[in-house]
Length: 188
Length: 188
Picture (cartoon, helix red, strand yellow):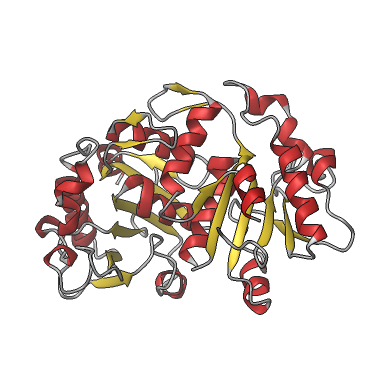
């Protein structure tokens, strides 16, 4: 059993903009229940008084629905932060770049991280790779993440589930431990 | 045409240990000519007096052939640094973590990077993601990188070419620009 009682929960980029139809141009997302499962983890973390960090993507691109001031920049209702909870804005993919995340974690003596959010192979993966390389004991909750279908560099269409499965294979055991939320709750 | 005349060439983990048979347990590597193509780029960079950084993985695991003192820790002959060239040892995947790479680049006023090496979806990808997020204009030379076949998280076997194609799709246009060496040499 893993001890998550001191771990920080880091929720990455679960904002309304992710529902914009263009993300699914090559095919639908996976894990439609991810937001509900994240909400369940948030409840556990809140009930336990454990540290929570909400990471928000504040795009600097004029046309982006993630730009501050746009409706898409807002957190999705199911996972919205409480007013007492810390929100970390970022402008790149990794939650560790251009933010105080590493310093806040070190200052609080937090050594282990539970990471959830979107997109698995983009901001989540960039953050998980850095978390592991920075020496944090890092857990990625696979069914609390999602992505979309996309073509690989040779033009082959991959479903969201295939894209996520390759991302998880690259991460698991090298940068983090991949778990699922049922296992996390059972171990907790 | 892109101007590579001020770009740093960063060669990642092209060490003898990569030839250990276990890397190919699930299937062979791609781009068998990668080392020769990297050597060609090194010649161009040396002839032009441009900055070169050789990144070496110094594993901290007792059993690893990348551990300092092991034969595998040595750079492959085709891409061995000159004695005047800078070698950056690292102990994690990203060449930016636990090294002076970012500071050295900033101090030298270097804003653009040409990245090559191995493995595409591991240390190369971790480094490219950080390079882009740190604001460097980053080029990844796809035919100067290679990887190996592997199973995705659901157990599906993917060839090295498939693993690399998914990695490049995640990186291109988001963290870097993917190019090939013929194009780079033609533009140069």
